[in-house]
Length: 400
Image 1 (cartoon, rainbow, N blue to C red):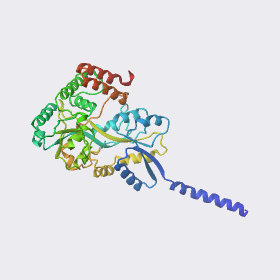
Image 2 (spheres, rainbow, N blue to C red; image 1 turned 135 degrees about the vertical axis):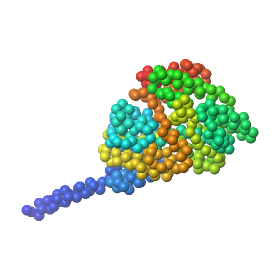
Image 3 (cartoon, rainbow, N blue to C red; image 1 turned 45 degrees about the vertical axis):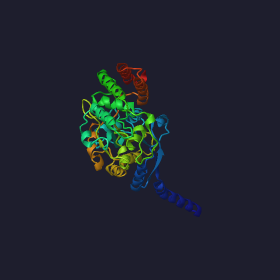
Image 4 (cartoon, rainbow, N blue to C red; image 1 turned 90 degrees about the vertical axis):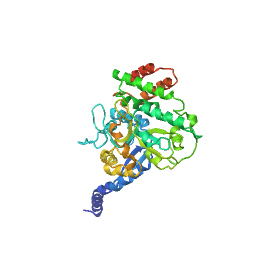
């Protein structure tokens, strides 16, 4: 063998020996579409430390809806975050997500199954991480804890709120409850009275009753704030909406909002406050439940690594770290919660997510419902007329 041929053989042997090692050193890059919350970076750091061969790059988004079309054409992040069950169900029904290994024991709160299982065939396609039940905050200077405990239903709440307004003698104006979203208010009242949002004829009476209650609340003077009532007064633990501002200024007796506000409200020292479950309907204090979950894009080049990251995000370890970072309602039932939420932890047992019928476009439905709520608020539709229009939308969705 000539020296040149011998040299080529040695080169080929070296390449064949070292190429697997070189390839093994090349990290796997995964793109995670999610919101830019500090806990996301912490999760990435912890996972990468445990999996040195994988790198996660965060793509900040506020909603996955705008990614849906490009996901159909193969240009999609490896991991998607869903902040609404409608978004998850839409991606799952369009077969844009990979099935995840099923589990014998569902470790998360029951109401979050709509964030994890495709409704049409009950295949698990996402992993929940947090749960956000709606709760009722109150100013304990304006409403004593003893009085708050006596509030059983929505009529009791309205009575107490009006009493606080009339008894107030200071220069400030005290409000009761702001219904900061007609859709949230409507869904909660329908659920608490035994109805659903699937367009079944039996729900007509529940829909009509919810609209009647909404109208009665709006008719009470000074109870529901208007945008003009907001003041630009800086406060630590700032919150969204008119009532969030009023509550943190000590001008509102109650604040009905999501449990994610617990952390920010607990950081302020402007007002004394407490929290309790929302009032009951005919079947109890059923509350609207939000959250988030994570799914793996069907076209990812690294399905095993992406699934491992999603599993980590919903793991006991990751959720304990989440709680330590101020996310106080983990999706897992076995993760301890701080004392600040102990009194309302049981709301997760009765929390329900929006349950539109299979195949309906939640975005289009909610846009149409908004128009009906506006017409109802303005008196252009009475309770019966608005209920009939809502039932039509819930039955037909975007197939009208």
